[in-house]
Length: 479
Image 1 (cartoon, rainbow, N blue to C red):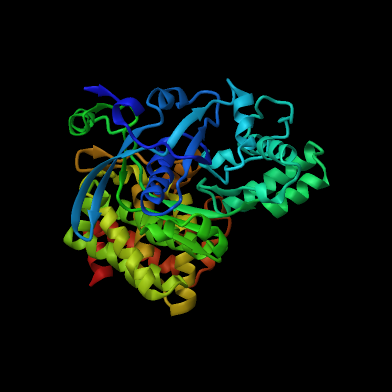
Image 2 (spheres, rainbow, N blue to C red):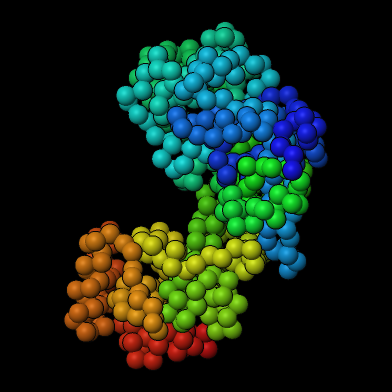
């Protein structure tokens, strides 16, 4: 089996146009794949230089393969299973700024560099006041980025045509605004001057984005089979689902420079990312949070099993189509299409997504993913969404512990939450359990007993689950 590099693969090398902070699985399976499509289907003609954002990373391994790796996409496409493998060739090289800071700064001197893309985890976009301009490099990602921007500003004498288009892909709401705020703080902290501040504001755009693709990563269970299929000894194979979505809050001129939507990709340039963020949280994360306890207490173990089960699948669809869609403001046809796509992702035969992994810290998840929808549904319809309330009853029941068959139920959350639920269930009174949970401001930052009818409905559902089991409770909701 051949080693993988540009001598053995003999692929094209593109002019460097993109600086990418992060060499991990997600960026290689999402952003670099999108750029690969751009290079093949449009006149983008751009290569990527990867910057390792932390001291220990993978750029040495990436460079040993000349930036090449294979992407294995698996999933369902309009009911048809897909299992493809492609050689991604857009990364030209990787740089570790902790080892070669001067080479890192030289990226700013390349007049063809136009885009900066990052995924440095949710904690990566943070201001660290201990960072200094003289550090080689600054420890935080915004600090490193400010160093690079300031070097470009000085090297090109403040030329406003040499700015950057910056797409942060960290999974935080309004990531672009947060990153821009951090850079502004470094401009103040390091006394970089009004000239640089004006250049940054005029020449550079930092845009909010939303990214969505499940990336399991290195497919260790099937790597031998993949190596046989590709004929190369590739140590950087990455596996991802076929679904992808990139929402970018940016004007039309940015879309023209980064024409991913013209390459047949699910990339949207929109005036506001907020409704798409709400759509994803509500229609993907929201159903996950409630189907997991309901499915588990019905004897099911994976998301796929829940959706395909005749009864629980009906429950999942009720929550999505009859309840949560009603709380969103995008066009109904667009919402229903997204929900259909989510269901197809849920039954991906190549991914085994255990519901117990989703139930980690269920109360904070319900608070952010489902509680807003519950309130909006009540406001708009004048009644409570039974499916969501049953989901909350399922979470509360799961936190009771005990056994499911021969398997011990072991909820995972912070100790204070576990102690609270244990003490409530020890009363043996489902009304006290319901009111105790709803009234716990430590869980909700408010008293949910004030929501009309919620305590009564939750009490009824908890009692039904205790008396007749979860599947009987589901039948009353989906009848």
